Image (cartoon, rainbow, N blue to C red; front, side, top):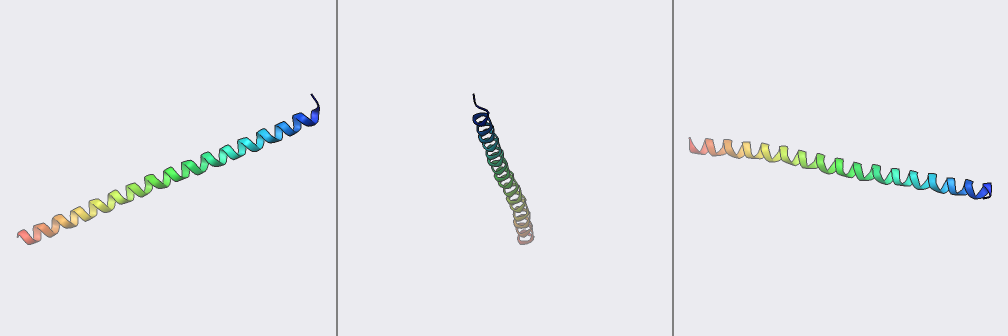
Length: 61
């Protein structure tokens, strides 16, 4: 094999690995943001439920 073919093949492999790494990083970031949003919404739901329970207690008293 000619050395230039090996160099080009090596460059293509490196570029492919970099692109795969970028896509994996973006994918992980999206899932991290999704989980964070779900956790925040869960906290909001708990706060709203506490507020509703307090209103029910005030109206019942």
